[in-house]
Length: 103
Image (cartoon, rainbow, N blue to C red):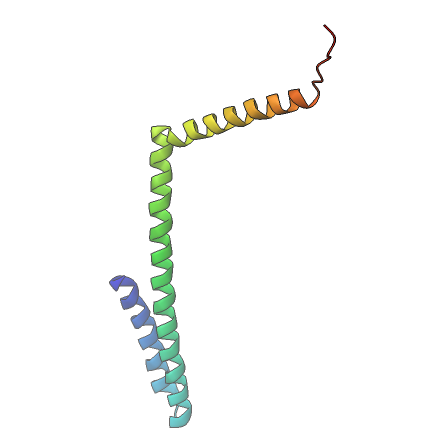
């Protein structure tokens, strides 16, 4: 994260040097520098949120990969499908079954 913040500071400092070099009106320069400071804060927060979400996603994908490697997810899916198939088969079969009372 420090490298990202350093890069952001470098880009934003370059913008400030540009404003200092080319803008002669102090009111306009102050407004532009305030805008650059707001951009800096926003960009750092956006980078922090992006890094945080990427870390969470990577951790979850790692867990899923481990479950797939161990076969847990596949076994659970097979059991669920088997249970669903078995229960739905008999449910449908008995819907149409009407026993006769003749002996």
